[in-house]
Image (cartoon, rainbow, N blue to C red; front, top):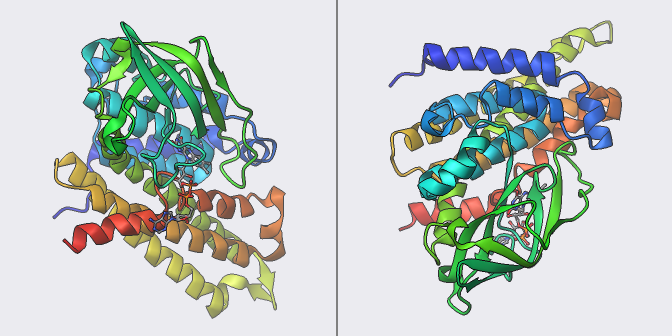
Length: 379
Ligand SMILES: Cc1cc2nc3c(=O)[nH]c(=O)nc-3n(C[C@H](O)[C@H](O)[C@H](O)COP(=O)(O)OP(=O)(O)OC[C@H]3O[C@@H](n4cnc5c(N)ncnc54)[C@H](O)[C@@H]3O)c2cc1C
């Protein structure tokens, strides 16, 4: 057992931390308030190699381990969780899926530009009637010779507007449930493919989320990923890894809450002394610090198990449930420690609480994660 990060991992942490503090922090409150997508930040993250961190260098990625990815995700999300989710989707839902399941032709054509961060990907599974029950989708893909015709509506697609390509799940065979779902890569320019307007969200407001509309969109047959009917298994296997990224995002929000609480409590004077000297405040800070350490161990353990090619599905679920609940508690207490100031938009403190909430919902809700964990324990 070794809890020490490697020299390379420490360097990534330092690079991501400095980048987030100097490049993402300026304007973060305004971008959240006005729903401004972090275009410059994402471009700089690409230049740093943060958009295809775990992808092999053969496909223009950085070939790093999952622990390095979680460390960078935590640091980015500590400052701007919206930038964190853009990074997370491109790395763990798009590049990972393509590298593991797509043909060399697809990797050559799409993965290389996506892993370098020159172009951006989105992952589109959810539909209005199928969220947690994701295989209950209505979007269809009909084979017509050398292409498929795709029709349907997808919703809540992160980076749906700012991405260039979308990993899309659609039904190729009706009446057989999840066994009829297939996976495709779809280009934004294809005729009949339209985007909805950006959703107005509680948190991660600087990231874009939208509906996608497919009206008999002609997709080349070679854009099928894996075989027909394998789509749902591909989605689930990909989301197992994706949850580690979201857990790291939650960890970043929790750490930001602790950092802000410590510095404000040392500055804010009430009853003639800093509020950090009141035991009620100290206990909140102690609880936050304790829970964050525990969450980080769960996140790193899930990442390590993935890197060791061990079964890690329910460990990533544990990491996500725990880290997201820690993020909610820490950010709520952070607002409390800041008093009325923390409730004000310009403080940037209430944003942490709003951003934390989504980590309990997307890539599988906390309830669904508990179902996954319980199933793996009660065999
Ligand atoms: C900002 C945002 C970004 C998103 N980005 C993406 C994306 O990029 N790609 C994508 O495909 N999707 C995306 N989603 C969709 C997201 O993954 C779903 O919202 C999530 O899976 C939950 O589905 P639902 O919202 O339909 O909730 P529902 O499934 O309707 O669930 C409602 C409630 O019921 C509970 N519930 C449901 N089933 C059970 C059960 N069996 N046992 C116990 N409780 C249950 C849930 O936990 C939840 O509390 C995004 C969503 C949001 C809000």
